[in-house]
Image (cartoon, rainbow, N blue to C red; front, side, top):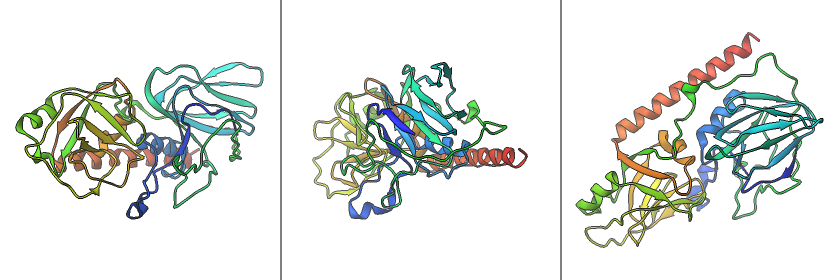
Length: 316
């Protein structure tokens, strides 16, 4: 396959290189990790196989071999053009057979910020520290025009699995994101604690894969804090010196010295992943026990999906 156009910030992303944070190496990985896992399950890949994370304007990808792909996450109106330049619209969250000589394109961003392209058998991109995820700071696994990969060839199967609506993440441009309280939450003034949960925050244009900067009424601490840099994670919410907030995202640093007011629960990270500049968020605190229960429930549903896909393959 060859990238005729690379699109804006197209990268390889899998579940990240999480076991090297003690060395100060940031994890990278997909911002919408759930989308990558679901697409790989549909294709019967390993869940941690890399997909291509794309934004709009999106890439154009030419396939020289017959293969099977799945697209999900944001809806960028994907379609194929064959050798005769006929347009064939394809659906998100469904495995699609792609004939040799076909090009994958995207027409329009309907909603969401990031779409993902996965192929059956995975992308043979270079692996570093157990991950194929692009690291732009190091120039590792970048994607540029004419970038080429030799991907596995597959025949057209009798069944092309798709993802039911009940399993698709409940994306929204103005979601309520659930949090558990962070270590420094109680250092806020009473007014700021109330404001954090009741007011709306807008995602700033100054946001990227490292973090979302939020704009809202400034928050303040009861007393100034001098903190030693401590571990942070994807979803950690920090209070900046100007009283505004930042939510750390997939390319986050491994430690930080700003007050940690909360952490986005794992079940809501995919919803946050599809938000972008000018989208509006609200926050709701829940207990750690509730967050764990939501995560367990989600993982049970994923196991059912995997069992269903395996059953279809067994009786094909």
